[in-house]
Amino acid sequence: MPLNDHCRRGHQESAYVRRHFLKVATEVATTIGMDFLYTLAGNLAQELEADSVYIGEFVGGPVQRVRTLAVCVDDHATENFEFPLSGSPEKEVAAGHPCIFLKGLQETFPADLRLSELKVEACVVLPLNHSESPGPGLIAAFYRRPLRKVQFAQSMLAMFVPRVLAEVRRKQAEDELRESEQRYRAFVTVNPDPMWRIEFTEPVSTDLPEDQQLENIMEHGYIAECNEAVARLLGMEKEQLLGRRLKGLAPLFHEAFRAATGSLVRSGYHFDTVETSPVDYAGKRRYFLRSHWGIVENGKLQRIWGTNREITELRRTQIALAISERRLSELLETMHLAAIMLDSQGALSFCNDYLLKLTGWRSEEIVGKNWFDQMVPPEERERQRVMLSSSRINGRNHLEGSVLCRDHRRLLIGWDYVVLPGANGGIAGSMGTGSNITNDAERKAECLPCPL
Image (cartoon, rainbow, N blue to C red):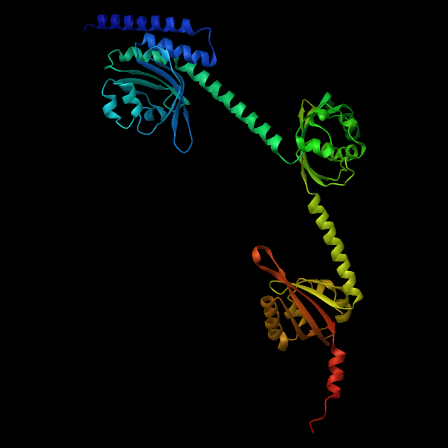
């Protein structure tokens, strides 16, 4: 073919494509979103004389697949569907490459039952991207006959790729936002911990002195969002709390909130965690770890987010344990018993004042040291270690053994050991209480008859 004829034919084909493109573009010009995709699929099927056209997105998961967003079969919109990429002609498109078959499509992909149901023989499938990198989806035209106008079909589909790509990305962004909002709402609603958001009738300037910032927060702040856990804490309905001013909270709760918010102000509204102990509506003291942070824009505090993790039972247990330990210490001192705690390696982790007075050692000289190496005469160390190991097996044991004083004297102590259980069924160490039986042993030795 002469060059001029070839150029003329090329211009004619370009004009032909542009004419059909403008026709479709005019039909879809006033539509957006999913309406655009449905309208485009139908118009492309007519102009391309395709038996089916669809626009789809790639969906990840255990099996990568395609989810259609708009489908036109035999000039009619049909329900969307999903199919796996494996064994389909669309698999290459997921990697960013066009897929074009002029005929023999079913024979090439016999495992794809979708092709046999549609009885297709040819296809043009393009990725939704600007290069050969993977895109978020694809646009496809299928034919039940061998494809002849392949250049026309490819050009038409390619001309709509940028707009379709923009719509699919917008749709996916909306999906992500909606799913994120749903997860957020579900998380806040079902969370057993109180969660809340404070807004202000007027933003709070962060340039003011800290005490003035706190006053403005308490004056202009109101509860814009909270979950049921907050309502239960305050003994109110959630609807009663929304919009309530901070200064309108119960006085005792108001003071606890004010004190914790002061810590947030001093932190510069960065993420912070502080312990609070408000009194609830029933008059009971409760303990929380409050995590909060502020949103500051252009030097103005816009809102405060916060969540409270209740630690009431933990704090009550710690208080009860401290009281119990104090009572035990007082009891041991009153009964004049030596008390020690050894870790699993035999190091002394605790001793009472009575033992220190009895032996003359100072606490810093023996605590943290190995009990047997520091406090037991060399000739008795192995025996006492064996006896202690036996106590860990049997749970408790009694032994009499010598203890070295700071001035090198030896005292005979009658010990009763018990095992201290550790995590996962292990042994954390041992605790022993002992009485000084040195004088009793000496008197007993004096009373023994002379063997001569």
